[in-house]
Image (tube, rainbow, N blue to C red; front, side):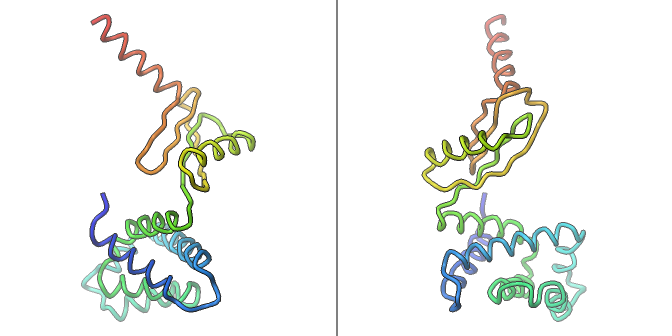
Length: 187
């Protein structure tokens, strides 16, 4: 469930990007910001304790802003960099990942993109990827951005996750459902 903090901060960044003057069009600005926030997320997750440092009352705001400047100054768009400073001053780093996800969803909605995760027991071929992307694009009416996972325990079949929806056509789930049906019959 998305809270008010995530929604408000995500909307503020989204609006600021659309109002920002510059050479990039709306689509490019949103894609750039989304990618930059994903990169920041990766850096943060590789640096254990970053969010605790940024939310610590023992560290002054000036020191925290110095960390942001050292880590990200000159490497991000002005708007995304300023957003990180606002998170720092507002002591909202504990919400960063949720804000990033909500912002990413807002960008995807605006850009007509649906992110799906496809889980199979084996890597997909290029032909399978194309068929899945086409079928899902027809279903959701958006361009598909697909990520893949492999899970050998599925035995066969496919699981597709899109937002809060899961399409489970795995052999493992079918066998579990069959087992449950048989248990009810036998008693």
